[in-house]
Amino acid sequence: MGLKLRVLYLGKMEFPRFRLVECDNEATMVVSPAVALLIQHPTLGNILYDTGNSADFLKTYTPEMLHNYPITEMITIEEALAKEGLTPGDIDQLILSHLHFDHAGGLQHFVGTKAIDHVLVSEADLKQAWWAVTTGNNGAYIRSLFDVEGIRFETIHDTTWLADDLGLFIQASHTPGVIGLILKTEHHGTILTTSDAIYTADSYRQALPPGGTINATTDEFYDNLERIKAMEKNYNATLLFGHDIDQILDWAGQGVID
Ligand SMILES: [Zn+2]
Image (cartoon, rainbow, N blue to C red; front, side, top):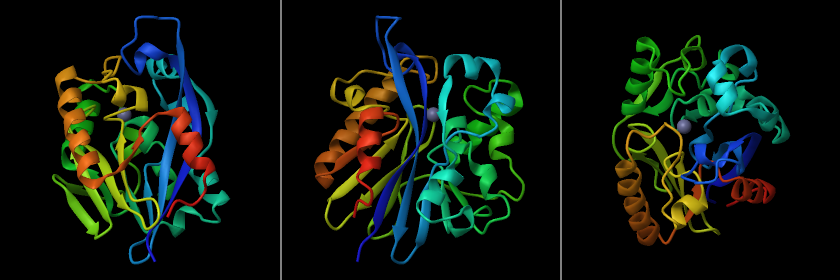
């Protein structure tokens, strides 16, 4: 018996499309979902990849974040897990693709649980996050979201296999280290998740670099794109992107993917 994947839809943000991908028309809007993945693994237990936005976003996010990325629907990770019959205390392993507010925002729900003292992140992203919040160059990082009570991080800096069918790889695009997953399923082949290193299927297929001010250069995006294309071919994989509303709603609606 293999791993079971569920895509957890955690609500959405709505903002001009040019903040997500390069786009000439300033008026076109885009809907951008928040998402987490629940992986129920036969030997590793319940693994959660990302935690969505913070329920306290109105209090904790900066005016600039709230202006640029307005949250128009909020589903907490606790609510999403409850729909699957789980609580935060049932999660054995947390993995954060990176520490931006819409991925680390739900960490507070895990304070006091068994998962909080070994949260997997990339070393490069953790260093970037601490640098950002202690120099005033916050970008999309908020200290109170990831510096929660009892937190201890376990860092990786290269491809790491937690099991034969579950690998983590690091993408130096969007932040210096965004964790992607390699999930080998029994009936759906291999699934690669890019998180925010590639936001949408359009961005991938049309090689549209991200908009806004998050990426330092577009070169890092194109370099990562080539690497993901090679991985897609190698693994004959299906890709799951970070903020593609059509794909996230479609996959979330499928229930268990195994
Ligand atoms: Zn991000």
